[in-house]
Length: 243
Ligand SMILES: [Zn+2]
Image 1 (cartoon, rainbow, N blue to C red):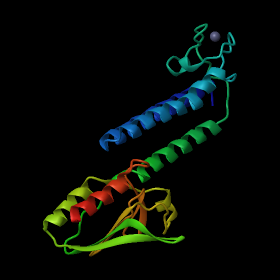
Image 2: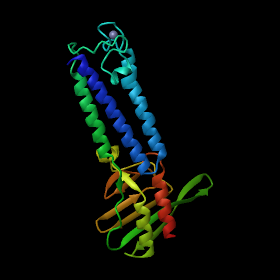
Image 3: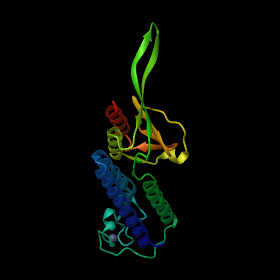
Image 4: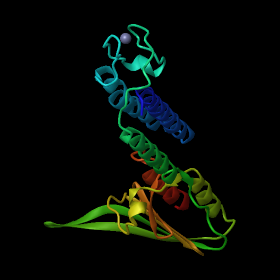
């Protein structure tokens, strides 16, 4: 592989990171999460700095063979030495490992994005849906023992009823995505919220646990984006709609 190709590989990497930033921003804006969009921009630029700009600034390998000047980030735009205008030679060989590493990295990033792409929560099925709402209540204190109290309410949603419509509408406001726990096939989670809603009907099993994770037909998923509080908001709204 020539030095010229090496520069091309770095250009492809840079373009890839810029596309990745655009995808993060697009997802964040689509879901109305500007913090996620901002996080994508900051993270992407930081990564670009660490992986592309800093190495280019300090690389001895990517230096002009005529004047010895390190090409620097300007090589991303122009294939000549910024110091003496000598074109980048095409006969200096570097390893092909970088190409393999770049392809693997790109596949990993694209794969992770596709796997965790947000999806609309399933709508209510036809037929009755049984709903159980659990809410943490004031704990009972008996001398030195604190006994946690849980308030449990049961409801049945009839198809077409105002309650069913309300719950349907609330569900349609949220997305879920596959996550690391889905991939591992976890069957337990920690960190349940104050309000949990369990919905079940024909081929429909939704356990909204009031936190980051939910069970949908037996598998763990993440509700919304990490840290946006969507899981807690979702169960609070359902509980309120059914009161
Ligand atoms: Zn030069």
